[in-house]
Image 1 (cartoon, rainbow, N blue to C red):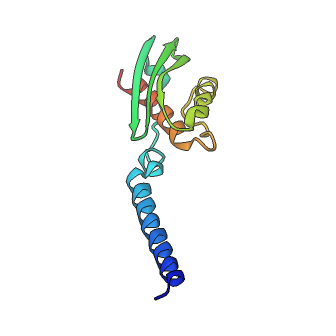
Image 2 (cartoon, rainbow, N blue to C red; image 1 turned 120 degrees about the vertical axis):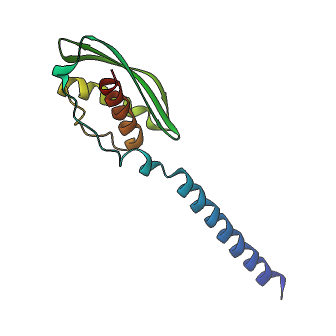
Image 3 (cartoon, rainbow, N blue to C red; image 1 turned 90 degrees about the vertical axis):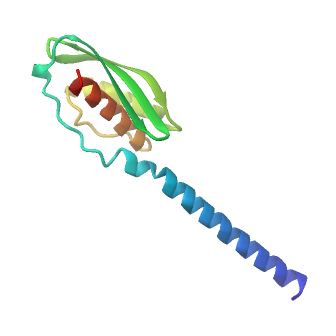
Length: 130
C-alpha cells in the first residue's frame, strides 16, 4: 500500500473515531432531555403567604438558585442567586416575563432553552415547596 492511500485510510479512521467520541459525549450530556421535558405546574398564588422563597434546579451543566419574593399573593421580585450555564445567561430575562404575567407559562428564550427551563423549574420549586 503506498503512502498516499495509507494516509487517506488513517485520516478516515481518525474521523470515524472522533465522530464516535463526539456522539458519545453529546448523548452523555443530553442537555435538551434534562429539563425541557419536565412538566411545569401552575402555581396558585392565592395560596402563598408573603415571604421570600428559595428554589433550585440542577440540570447537569445548568444549575440555578433563585429567590422569589411574594407579597399580597403576587410575585414581586425574582433574584437569580446562582446561574451556572454556558451561553444561557441571556435566559435570565425570563424572570421579568414571569413577574409581568404572574405565571410560569411564558416562552423560553431562543438559544437558551435549557437555562430558561431550569430558571422556570427553580421558581416553581421555590413556590411549591414553601
